[in-house]
Length: 283
Image 1 (cartoon, one colour):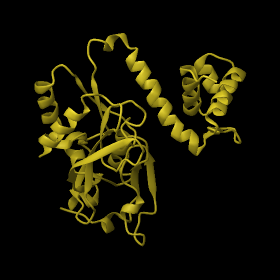
Image 2 (image 1 turned 30 degrees about the vertical axis):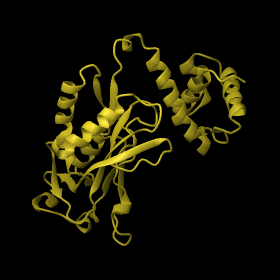
Image 3 (image 1 turned 90 degrees about the vertical axis):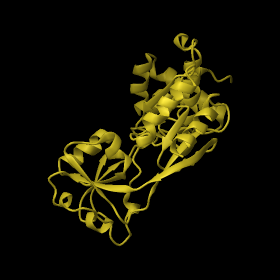
Image 4 (image 1 turned 60 degrees about the horizontal axis):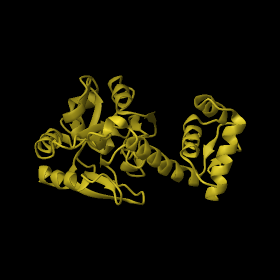
């Protein structure tokens, strides 16, 4: 069977919608036709992509791997066929919030001066890889190692961590804090793009309550309301400060690496220029 773009779009719709019914409605096609398309794709790949054993469909491990590949392929085709992109080929730099911290503005200024023919688009994407593995970005500024095959990364610098709490919290009265100071508090964790998890604390002294959120705005809101504390790199208050929260140095937490990641092969031709300029800007 020759796999066509429609097979990939159908699979991605199913992965996003969670049911055949909702995916078929979004695609304006019948459920049996969509099921046949999925089955044909699985037969071609020789792997089961979707677990149909529950009412709410779940992707198999193979399905999760293929989802990223399919998303990248569809994004590449859509970009290639975009009539508005023929005049220039923007370089998309993804990030999950603080980008390159205090160096962000200087990186953009230097790029505009040296590479005016290639627009550099800074895109905040609430995803652990800032859209890189889904083809939504050409390079990404990350604060956790990227382990996906086919990508490379380079550490540009490291950042200290800070504790985050409501501005009227008792903890905000202290000049600095330790992990033990936070262990009795609920902790806000961004499960989509955050880098903090309970493993940051020693196994014998971890927070017992977690407030899960899916983006930086909701993370800040939970902390500002006094529902939880948080831990974040020091660039967060510099780039995305919230008026109702306080930030204090966290003296015993490990530093956070700031990495630039990109596709190893077949990526945007200007990525090497971006890597070189990022090194220069933080150096």
